[in-house]
Image 1 (spheres, helix red, strand yellow):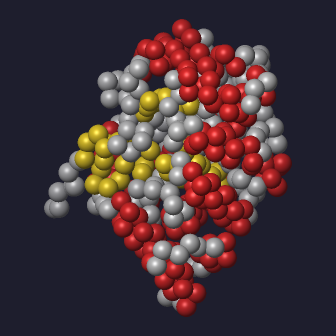
Image 2 (spheres, helix red, strand yellow):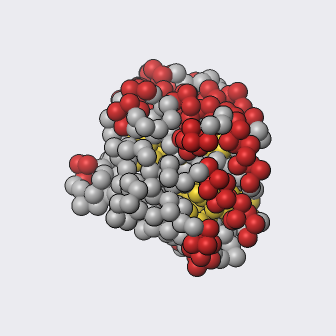
Image 3 (cartoon, one colour):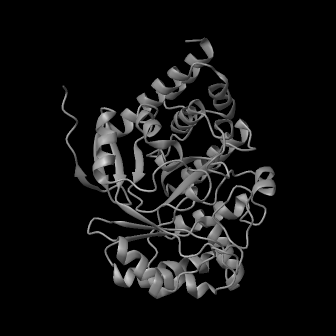
Length: 365
């Protein structure tokens, strides 16, 4: 272990915050296993051997979108083949066919459909809340909040208050991509700016909502921009303590047939998860998104600082509209098996990390 890494490890163990320069060193050093060991140490001190998951359902009410993000294969133009917008009846039919007694969360994101009014998005929430009052509604990214403000002529605060009145319980972390303007101008110029995305979450936190934060890595961003992204959500967390979890998302290529050089490497995936755990000292959890990195790396990630592996999903569409090679859903038993196989304790949770069931550790053979 070299002197520079030892300095960083000492800072972490003494509760000192890591800097941008510290993060850059962690991205540059070849000693990945020492980073993993340190991230694992931090996570075990916070969460013990517990690893969390939820039984949830993804719902994408519309794929019509005015934005043209360069990484997205899900969006469609109005009238384009494959474009859809669910009516309330279609939404309830979609959910009803997939619903089980154990689903605790609806995770709702979709296109920025400018052909329907803001009331459409309110109705989507209210009809689900009316028919499934005990299911948590996690809906609409910070980018969608800014889009709703634009089409409704309201402020982001007014939009969020209206959504809460309709039944919104929490916000997902999507739409963040990379929180620098250089990146956003190239990759998602039609969506919320860095400040607008952060503002949406700031307002949500002040309204009493707990939210989530993501980072979409693996394209044109620099390592410095990844760290700036982490530091920006860390700064907001210092102010509001409103984030539940940080979720690094590996960029998927535009085609399922893309070669391995178009995908993030296992080394980068594991390093980014571990660095996230070390940089985000005020986040309770770091989540591995098995949809994007696969089940095997997700299992390994539990020794790289990860304390959450997401959920059952039922039917994931957005990553699978591009190059995701994974299943679109997992069962509770499969998630438990993954966690036990990593010598961790599976914990089924609700959206807010209240424990529903703690499973026994795997039996030693």
